[in-house]
Image (tube, rainbow, N blue to C red; front, side, top):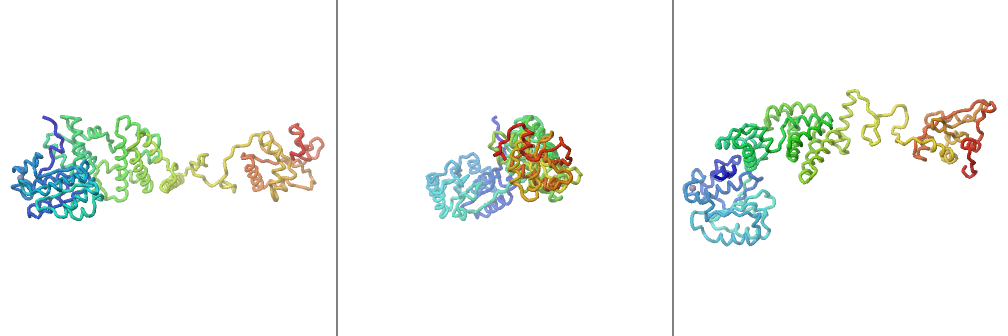
Length: 532
Ligand SMILES: [Zn+2]
């Protein structure tokens, strides 16, 4: 016997079997009982929530010879034919592939003939939002004046794409996403019928992965059963088949991120890749994990709302104390963005690695969230008494206030080579010309030279009794800093300036009286007048 997929095998055959849509099935079965049926219904809601299943049950119920409490009996001739798909009264149209006006015109012509058997002709148009606008126009004419024996059931996931003129002629039913509890209970029930032993935790995970869709949950469960045929279905096996990751691993990963341990976080990812986990699923699940953490953080009474296990809740509560709101929001934002990017990407792993580095290193981003996170890092360090270091060239760190009263922010420049200082000495006249005020006064009598450390040494020949004491002008921090800044701006290199005062007047130790003499001596090259 060929294998029948669970969702086909256990498709609800009467209203009471439909799980999670009680508000709808009650209304519909009451209408059947009271014989107060509408002629057009619109069923909307996300995929796998039971729209076409309920449509088929309704089609059977309205034609059933012996309806039971508003539900089809599933035993009469009509019920059987509809179930087999042999009924002349029930038409299923997939609008995704039959969306043209001619498809709808065929239906309109058909509608003109009364049913040869049973009471109602039921047209179920699935994915109705796919109809072309002219097809909608043709359908509208029929909806305006339908024969009494016709019922239209329009099903769609995209209700906003349905023209208002159509909407206004339908009874609308919104199918809810089905809760994890409801799905898990249904899965448990079916596993008993199938004689398969399954851990509750395993079924809950499948239900969660189904994301509110009973059909998807059943398909996933099918996969898991097929993989471990004849064995007990455990949580670990489900994770294995679905390529999913256990919460404990998410917890480890998150804690590494909170500690800003990039290496540790990447190692965790590596482990998951090695185990062959599905990276798309990982991103979705980790985002979900962070979302749960946010809810736990925002309210301690979230336990009842969150559908998580006791162990999972324990981890979340611990982590809620380890991370602040803004940082958590930033984590969620980065991972939500990642889940959009990653779907199409062939470099999934690299994208995840980048995201993990971003989580650990808020300084890599420049938006508000990350700035808040950076301030947090700084505050933490200050509390721990860790001195902050000056920023490196790439500006990654946070600049502390400098000691002294020096410039608050100093540009990092390469130190000038001795040859460059030499060159500077040659164009000294220009330096002097650029200077103003006291600095200029100080420089006029200075003789520039390069000392053995490669510094710019300004020599002043100021023996006792000398009329000028310009050297003293450069002893002030600010004047000297002005000079250094001026030189740096001119040559783009950092130059240390020192002064030396010759206050002896002993013959032989005499220093140069002017720069021309000086250079002649210094470099042994002939200095051309125009250089000065
Ligand atoms: Zn029946």
